[in-house]
Amino acid sequence: MNIVLQTSTVIAAIHFAITLAIAVRVIMRRPTRGVALAWLLLVSVFPIGGAVFYLFIGERRISPRRIREIDSLRLDYRRISNAEIPSRLTDIDWSRHLPAARGLDRIGRYLVGSPTVHGTRFSLLSDTQEILKSIARDIDAAQTSVMLEFYIWNEGGTADEIVAALIRASARGVNCRVLVDALGSRPWWKGDQPRRMREAGVQLIEALRVGLLRSIFGRADVRLHRKIIVVDGKIAWTGSMNLVDPRYFKQDAGVGEWVDAMVRLEGSAVVPLGIVLIADWVLETGEAMHDVIVSAGLHMARPEGDADMQVIPSGPGLTDDGLLQMLLGIINAAESEIVITTPYLVPDDALILALRGAAARGVKVSIVLPEKVDSFLTRYASRSYYDELLDIGVEIYLYRGGLLHTKSITADRALSMFGTVNLDMRSLWLNYEVALFVYDAEFAAVLLNLQNDYIAQSDRLDPKAWAARPFRQRFMDNTLRLASPLL
Image 1 (cartoon, helix red, strand yellow):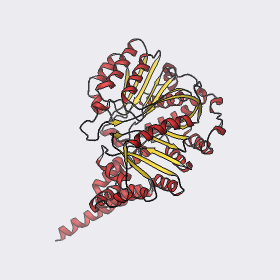
Image 2: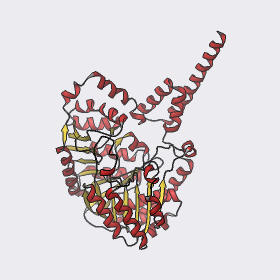
Image 3: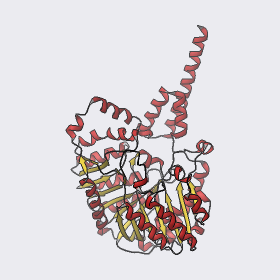
Image 4: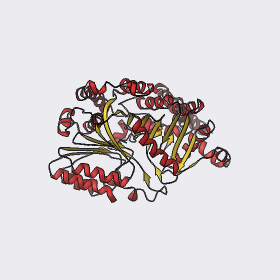
């Protein structure tokens, strides 16, 4: 009996010590209340497993070496931006735009160090086959350099034309640099294409490589989620699409083909996008930023077209909440209409409050989501947010045509966000993302047309029918919502 009592006492003491230690660490890290309470609950119920889980993924933890390198790069980023972007291109005629645009510019300048630049021409493409073929054509036309960074590369279909174009470009002396996330593209790294590209002279690097030792010093699930292409320092691409042909990608996931959009840019915005990509390359390779800029042919920004654009990168060690503040800014600025497309809706409290506030002040808020998503936890956690949005008049549309993967916002037909960021905790706090904030009515009109096409292929969620769904469904949604700060 005494042995049992002593054992119980020891276990209780260990439980208390672990819970207290993690609680102190969580409190001192000062995460949002929802995140903090979720971790405290998990560790209280499962002290050992919860503590191990927290130490692996509970913090925006990156290695001390990467922190030092990012700090150094941040200074280089600002210095090179000042050198490569003439002041006349950042002297925007704000009288052409809504007053809120100037406020967004200030947020980006002060929190991220990225000013709005004038003079970019754009083409928004939403046909994935056309996108892949257009990228291959740009690579085939390259004269000096091609740089790419992507989260997922998948073999098969028209995506293979990108590999062939890179091999041809390298053969004719074009400097080709390719940065691909190690975890997001793990199956691809095990295939034959990386070997063929390297043998052809393409410089190919795994970004954020994973392993036990790396997991000790930094989180393994912090990923490079950006999609950027820069050709000859004159043409850039970005958007939601990975280097995949949707006809050959995740066909067994039961969600249909992935639906994406990309924008092709010429002019001033190419330079800040190129600097983001080059900074990521330098972090992984240790090359001197100046040398990469020279070999990549990134020239001083030249205006092409009339659009004013602001490139906003984000990620651990790079910015704290700059991208989130920009998203809140564009939502809070809307006076008549907001349309949002996102594949995953697991927002933090600030975003939910901003969306509810916009609807409450009479703004028509429409959110377009895929009917089916490829993540079990996200699927149910996302549904738990529908009630509080529908209750206040937000219109939710469920897209039937596949996994809608386009990440976009239009506000008042004048302000736009387009890029790689999902409205979920992972995108906002863990992944390295990039977004274009565009202050241009023409861009907003083109993007809104695409969003309306998505809405035309969607079913609007009926608030009464949603409220009447069975208790077991509501309980499942709300239970998994408790894990949303940890997703």
